[in-house]
Image 1 (cartoon, rainbow, N blue to C red):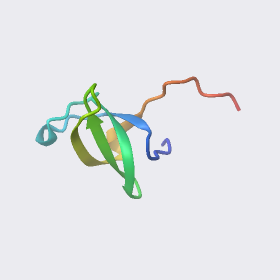
Image 2 (image 1 turned 120 degrees about the horizontal axis):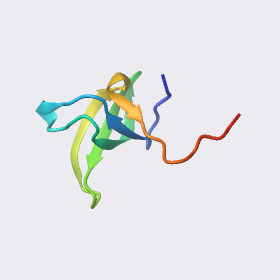
Image 3 (image 1 turned 135 degrees about the vertical axis):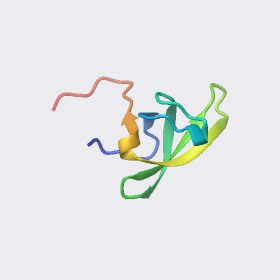
Length: 71
């Protein structure tokens, strides 16, 4: 499991119909609430948040925008 920390960009791995969120939607971790539970904010292209919810790491995949450096 990859370590998730604040300000990491993530995508949902499952639909959350009660929150009007679909698998693949991209959000930003804004806070660690408990071990393995994170507050994730979902925003539109203008930066306006349209959903914020607590999610487990098993519901998320971390997205990478750069190549990882070799050790």
